[in-house]
Every structure is written in structure tokens, then in C-alpha cells.
Image 1 (tube, rainbow, N blue to C red):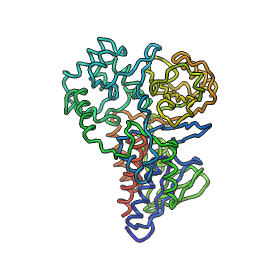
Image 2: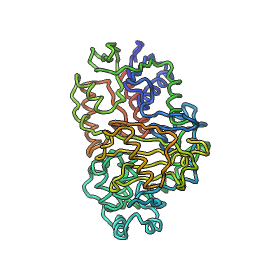
Image 3: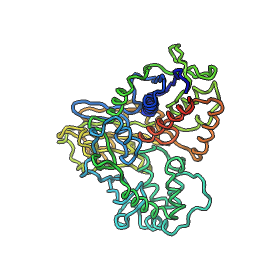
Image 4: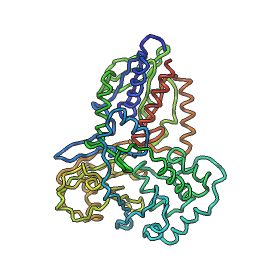
Length: 473
């Protein structure tokens, strides 16, 4: 790299953009490379969907409440930021999950991995699936592998291997919490490519999942000091990660409360124009934005119509605080999920104060209710009062809760959950190749591209920073 200071602009101050800026800064400091990094965030706060509220000794997440402990990108970042001591695990006595069926909650059978049965006895005993449905699921053990290798919808894949009942009553509601979409429109290769790999290498999805489970147990690399749990979060909430990143990024320029209007070519670089009229020159740009926003900003440079074709589903979550004495229902688990066929307002309800010790005082209860999924977004037209009314009606009918909450926190996330269409991976590759030709030095990352979880977004930000520094050399 030349001795001249190179300028990089990161558009988007969510976890992806912050991770990109952090790793670019870290690498340049270690190699003593002169660089000037600017983060531009249209809101007045960094962190994007990661927002934690502390109220009356409750800890309420408005966005992601936790992350998968086995995901190495976030564990590496946590180690870099010296946050290992802030990690906490789920309540080991509240790991039972429930699925709503015909208005009643049924325990999820042990041994289910994303809806795929890996233990025979619990699956046989469950009332969630009819005897006919169980026999159909067992056919996975003898069905041949798919001959033509190529992308298909996640829903079609599960139905093809395990049958429609498993898809409708177990897999779909479980995956709804991750993607909030219709599984028949979600790309298998973009969401769970290892399912396809299992089918090819083990022929059976069940046998492949068993083999992977044994391998994962053998290769568990979490440090001894890390709490043992599938999911982890922080003692003071997920915003701990954002706050520590902000501290680490003090040498980076941060522009808040200004939206990028457009990005235009300027010689071998780019002018990033803000809505206040200011222009910031960049040798390279990292766009940590939803796909439709990236397409709009790049419209003057090249047409990326495919980015506009990715649908984003609107969802909401409602935090409800109660006095424990007013809740007669036995909160002996972490919550429940609702199949689409139930026709309920709630897609899921997490019993947060049961699942996590840190979320509520001992004499209180905190529930986190979820609304919205692909094909069911009528709630966006409701007032907060009407939405709350419908949520409380579900809780009364399902859990017998008649008490009014002490307080509530409604978070509406419009166009927030990207739906990877079939052939997403293939189209994304073409888009990145076109961008290299038409707009070299611009890199796309975020939930709309290669993974919606916090660890996936961190990894995308890190990879974008590596590509940027390689480009600037």
C-alpha cells in the first residue's frame, strides 16, 4: 500500500458495519498501515437491531436476545474485546421448548435438531405428529438421495425427506424464529446447505444429523471458562457488544444521524453524498445495508436489480412485564413456537425470565412475544394498542394469563428479515462479480447476503474488511 492515507467509508453502523470497521482498523494498526475509516449511520445510535433496554431492573432486548455459542466468529470477537467474563448461559432447568397445536402446548421431543428426529423413542411418543406422519418421517432412513444436485426450497427439501407433517408442525415453526419466512420460498443452499451435503454424503438426513452431532461433540472447542450452553448472551444484555465495539473504535470517524443519499464515482474512488449535503471521499466503500438500500445507492453506477428482488418480512416483538404472583401458568421451560396452521397472532413466545436469570427481578416475570412472518404481515396496519390487545388475547387463550402487564415495550422492525430466494447463492455470486467490474472497491455485507444471525454478520463484516484491504494495497 502507498504511504498516502487511504480512506474507507463504512455505510451502516449495525453489527456488520461495526465489525468491518473494527477488523479493518485492527489489521491496519498491527501492520502500521495509514488508513482513515468513517462509519456513517442514519440513526442516532450504533448497533442496528441490537438494542437493550434496562427498566425497573428488567433487561429487555428489542432485537436479538442471544447467539449460538458454537459460532466461532462471535466468540473470536468477544475474546478480542475481552468480554468473556460478561457471558452468561441459559437456565439449565428451563431448556424445555413447547409447540402449540390445536390450542394446546406440547413438549418438543428431545433429540430434535431443527425439527429432524435423532432419538427414536421421544419421537415415537410425541403427539405432535400422527402415526402416519411418523412412518413417513422414518422413510428418510431408506429413501434414496437426490440425483440432481442443485438448489431447491428448504420447505420442499424437508417435505421430500421427512414428510409434510414434520415440516408443518415442527420444522416450520422452529425455523420461523430464525427467518420469519415461508420455508417453501427460502433457498436451501443459502440457509442450510449442510442439509444437502448430508443427503449426498449419508443419503439419509437423520443419519447425517446423527453423524454431525457426534462430530460436533467430539470437536467442542469452547474455552473451559465459557458457560456451557447452546445459546449465550451478556450479563447486561446484547448491547454490551456494541458498547465495547464503540470504545474500541474511538480512532474511527463516526457520523450519526445522517443518511447516505448516493454514492458516485470520482476518478479511482467514490464520493459518498449525505442528506445534509456533505460529501465524503472514499478509496473504498463497505455497504453494510439491506439489499434494497444498497441497490438504491449504487443505481447511478450500475444496475443491481436482483438486490431489489430479495423480500424483507416485517416483524415485531413485544416485551411484557408481570408480577409473578399474577401468573398461574407453570413457566417450566424457555417458551413456545406456533405453527402457521394455528392461525395465531403470536408466532412464538419466549419466557425470558425463565430462560435467562438476568432479565427480571425474582418476583417478576418477563415474556417476549413475536409477531409477523412471511405471508402474515397484516399486523403492520394495527395501532400499538390493537397489537397489544391481540397479543394479550393469545396469551389468555394459550397460557391463561388474564393479568394486565406492569408495562410493555413494543418494537416494530419493518422490512427487517431477508428472505433468501431459491438460487440466492448463485445470483449473489453473479452480483459480486458484476460489482467488481462496475464498482471495484465496493463491498456488500449484512443479513441480506450470507446469514442473518449476529455471528454470521460479524463474519461478513470481517471478510469485507479483508477484501477491502487487499484491494487498497
